[in-house]
Image (cartoon, rainbow, N blue to C red; front, side, top):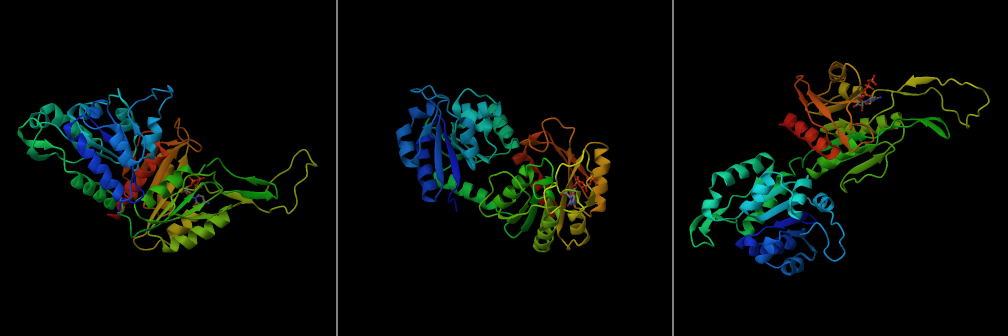
Length: 399
Ligand code: CTP
């Protein structure tokens, strides 16, 4: 079940640190790839050599390589992970994470992670039930960390009570459940369109726009991570990381995109049109390269067919149709008009006026409007995070 899952195990200073060796063994046995981060204090309880031998990977604990002085990239490690597991999580580390402190490598990885985070506390019983710890754990929960409650039993102090780190088997089974829960769209077929279209003028020239396809690709990837069967109809886009299970159909023009979207749309439970489809295309495509004989030339353009409108007109019962609206004036009203005209269940509004967001950027700022005209505006976020916000709202529509 954990085959090929990339897990970063963060070990902090607690007597329970010895159990991290068992956690690694169980994870590796299930096919997961594990990289370990240790705090300095954790090394008093278990050696990096033990954990690197079991994980078959280097163990990270410093921001700099002591020998070469080279910076060690905590961001890369955080982005590599499908899941961050902090086990054992000491009271000190929990307090640091809850308050956004960043005085060691582990905290830096935590603050850079966008993947699910699981925290398994371990401490003495009075520390565990102290108001400060309760408040910090509550805060981590509100920040979307999953907490595996400490278990009851004999503690290192000789006292008996709640505070023991959950047993490795329970931690691993918690993680398995999390990945199963993540497969909640297993039965769904999803169509996502992405990128620009190119409309040929002559054999060497075309009309297009600046769409990078990043938003659509991130949406497709997130649907795929949730277990959906995804078809991605993509206009000409740069090389982007696309999940292996996704069926990618490459198209160039608006007409080709329409043909493929209508075809795949018939089979789909959810359709998200994130592509920036050209609204106009040359009335005629010159078969030969147009020569620069005159000072001025005019290009006659004709309207392309609106793919989303056609999909909305032929929408199947229970099918969910989501569109985008790119606006720069009277934004909300224009988006609502598109939502109604195109028979959508939800529209994602982007404004060209938002700084930092937009076509080539890795960031986006959106407002989601559903068909009951309920609005939700979001902060500027990475396109990956925006994709998960959009998909989460779509899941609410399904439910
Ligand atoms: N769209 C489409 N087919 C087109 C044009 C747009 O399916 N020929 C889809 C886009 O993928 C997007 C939505 O319609 O999901 C809105 O696109 P947008 O460019 O914002 O609006 P338009 O409908 O093209 O209207 P206008 O350009 O006048 O704002």
